[in-house]
Image 1 (tube, rainbow, N blue to C red):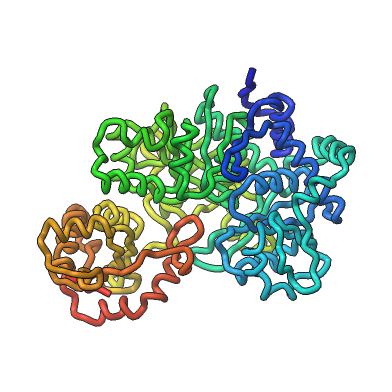
Image 2: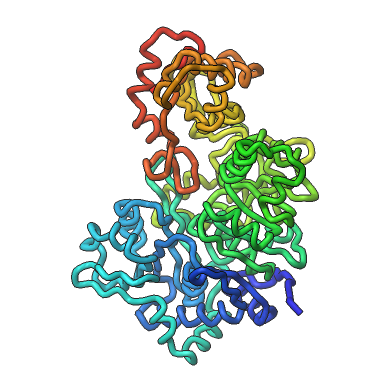
Length: 571
């Protein structure tokens, strides 16, 4: 019989994993793609690969405390590498696969890894121009064959290393790890997304990660038969803790989706009970149903997720209220949680039993939260990072008497629910001295079906403006409904009646905000903000500085004209 018991005694990820294998070894652990089919692997299968990779790393000279940097999209080998690196007592430094070669090279130089693991030719090619800066003593491992390796450098095959690892040495190393890996040991370095500046390496201990995963399962309540479908990048702490490590703690089954685009197909096939995602994912599902004309069809939303979903959990960014209301109205539980890389990440979350729309729930066990005099959210507990890698001054700047300064603004209501109201560093201070939280105003804008993305501008200015990306499908439908005579997308964005339509909708959405929070002008953009263009982080948060730089001419053009409320121009 499958053993889905949770565990709270081990204080390390290594200990949690070993406990899970001992108690559930023969049970199905994970479903992974192999060619055209999904293959089910047991906990024993995973453990064998993990211990062998740990032994392989040791054979390559990786010692306790050495950094091992991994650049790869989600795949089974990513999970094996993560658990194997920790079993070897090394420090895992996962890198977002979407980063450029220069960005990856920066992280390599900053953490000085003993070994680098690449997914294959794509990542090798990106780093080729920076290969000379990587010491020849650094071991290079690849999941997939790299035919064009860097001149004079040997690429070792991940699968060959695992297959060739000495079985007895692998078993010995696994036994050693159960005692040698300690709660305070550095487990991982995760580089922040860098929405406002240069990325910093966040140091998380074994106990940071283990305690947060255990507490998250404890507060959420595991059930027999739970199955997770995961698609979020495991290189980000949200998926790492809330999909990967909670899977280990609970002992449920995990499905590793091929890609974000195929997530719903995998949901239809495996019928998950739990799905984590960023708000954009859940909003995209909502918009799909709206465009299909089945948004209010009973059961349509549930069917998209396979029909068994007991909860979707949104994190990584603010969940627009209209999205939460849509899911609630259509009988699918969508919960919002809150956390940061520096907090392992979960600080608070709504649960099925305790939820309140518009909030991020109550703190999870072991986590303290309070609001500073200036409205900043502070947190203290075993989830808070060890510090920033090689940056003691940056660490000291965010820590006071054990309290971590999140940089977020928030409120705690009478029932103990936390509400995030804005980002401290993203506050807009107008020329008139008014403090404005752009995230709230942007949530009002994207609640309008005509608007796909929006960025509010106005720091040091006399009034606010906005960069707006229209939703193509809704805009086309509105143009037909309004009988606006246009023949192309460019013509539509420039048409006075289209601009007037957006202005009217924005006025409606902003009917209850203050005068100084109103939008004085806006620009309609012809493409969405993207990770590839450097405008979004890998977790889809806006890089406001970069967006302002790229659209500086359009922004200045708005402020060069005399303000006329909601005039609107197109680009």
